[in-house]
Image (tube, rainbow, N blue to C red; front, side, top):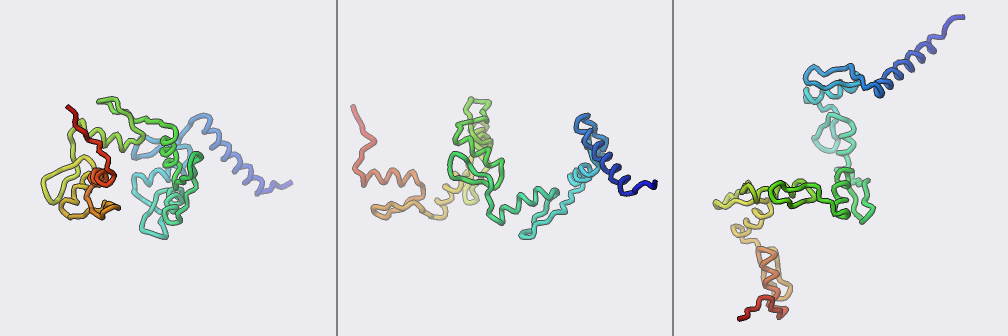
Length: 203
């Protein structure tokens, strides 16, 4: 009886799939990158990796000019345009576009502060806050005013300072409509209307 060539192909395909699957257990990665020391289980994964070196980004967004190396990255990016936020916090009503942002947000509820200052031991929820804090120890002030010679540790402090030059006073008193460039100045002013005297002098 003649062998069915389709069956031969099916057996061959199953054999190849099994061989690739067994590499998961053996840890074998025979496809080596010629540009770095990474290795991969399949030629497809190696080809995808090679885009890191070539800079190729074949997956283009139809809504903006961004391109991506991986189709998964494109699909994730598309949430920027669709507004989709599939990752929902179980503790409050916030939703997020990316699971990493949800995981970071959960520290608000858990109180976890995994980023510790090596100089003073203070801990922070977010690495960005730690990096900003470290400027207290280093004295670094990377945000420079373009109008004068002052520099600041944070962009927020620079923005507040720039109101001195622009004359902007966005904080308005609801009692007398007087305006202030800083929220702290408004809070001190409100005491006048409340009659409260928080700063008392005693002998």
